[in-house]
Every structure is written in structure tokens, then in C-alpha cells.
Amino acid sequence: MPRIGRVRRAILVIVLSVVIVPPLLVELFPDPPRPVVIPPAAPGRYRVYVADWGYHTSIILQQAPGWQLGSLGNSAAPFVEFAWGDRRFYMDGNHRPDVVFAAIFLRTPSVAYVESWREDPVRIAHAAALYAREVDAAQLTSLAEDLEGTLRRSDSLNRPVPFLQTPHDAGRFYPAHGQYLWWMDCNRWTVDRLSDAHLAKGGRGVILSGQVSRRLIGFTRIE
Image 1 (spheres, rainbow, N blue to C red):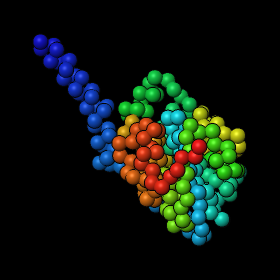
Image 2 (cartoon, rainbow, N blue to C red):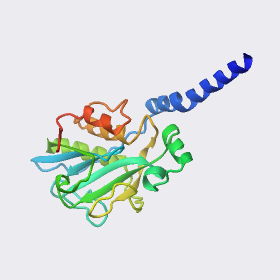
Image 3 (spheres, rainbow, N blue to C red):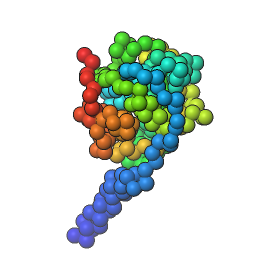
Image 4 (cartoon, rainbow, N blue to C red):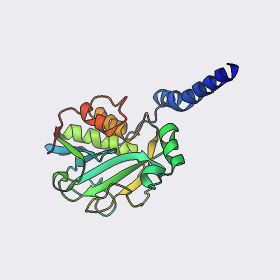
């Protein structure tokens, strides 16, 4: 019996160490996007998309005239995609068991991904699901500033994209703010960024890509 008690205590310590304590630390000591100022978008209506790639989501926004937020070589593209994830799993395509375990249960370095889109995503996005809505200039500017605040463009990491293959220019990875964890993954990141621009409900509790659509405000699924 004493041995069983020790085993139970050991299991409790493991659960607290890898399941409960790290998410609590993330909530208590967040690393939010840094303030970034972007020239205000010209008055008008703009399209914003949320793409569900199966287990990973991203945000694609229409650029305002004069903006150059796209990836290297096509910064003024009409649409720009932003995504976020674990550095080794997402950027390096490293899916070894130890890397997967670290990405889920430990706080690991993150990267942001930026890709230029030459055409409207409705025509060329091969996502499992695509959601769209229109926003005004103020909402677009707010969202773009929040997305830009996630990454550090001074250090571009030019790597091949492991699973966001698209028929146009490849994007670029950048070191990002925030650490990756099961409680703070790419899908929560998507909802949090939209929430900051009042385009989604809060992202807390969002883990799977299928949960993202239920938090969106004013978006319509593109069939």
C-alpha cells in the first residue's frame, strides 16, 4: 500500500508539472504582442479570412493601399497571411516524439509566419475550411498592428514551409513573442489576435482548430 501511495503522489506531481502549472504560468505571466504603429488604413471595406488547415489556423488580411506587410519579395501583395507556432515543430517540420512532447507540455520558443498572397484566398486557398468577413479601416489597422506586434521582422528565418503549401510565393518565418504550449497554441493565438480587434470572442480554452470558428464574430464560412 505505501508503494501505491508513492506512485499516486508521483503521478500527481507529473500532472501538476506538465498539465496544470505551465498553463497557470502562461496566464499569470503572459508575453503579449508588442505595440506596433502602422499607418492607418485608407477608409473603406476590407476582407479578413480565417483559414483552418486541419489542425492549424491562420489569419489572412487584405492589405490597405500603401501597406507593405507581405513576405520578402512581395511585400505589397494584396493579401497577407499570418500564423504562429512552435519553432521546431512548425518551422523545422521536426515531429520527433520528444519535440511533440515539448511542444505540447513545455513552454517552447515560437515563430510567426508571414506569406504574401497574389490572389484572393477564395480562389486559391486549399484549406479544410475558410471563413470571411468585411471590416472597416479602423478594425483592419487594429488587427494588423496586433499581428505585426507578434513577430520581430529584424530577424527573418527563411525556411521551407512544412505543411502550408500554396501555389505562390513562399513565406518567411520570424522569431515571435510568446511561448508555445498546449494551453497557448496556434489556434488560441488566432482567436486572441482577432479578439483584440473585436472580431472574435476570447481565446481562452481554444486548443483545436475546430474550436476557432465558434469564437468568430461576423464571419461566414466560404463553401
